[in-house]
Image (cartoon, rainbow, N blue to C red):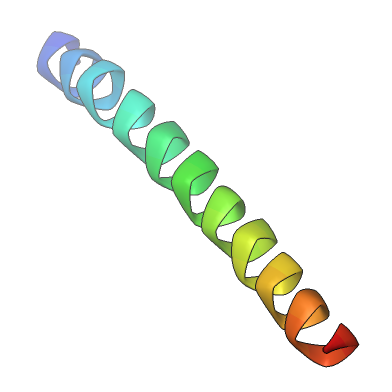
Length: 39
């Protein structure tokens, strides 16, 4: 049980970080597409 808790404690920040990175990338690509359509 303790090993599972430690593993989840180590993995969760990585999942949160990757979600934030993907959200930032999605926002950036959406903005790039919007600027590209405006031109």
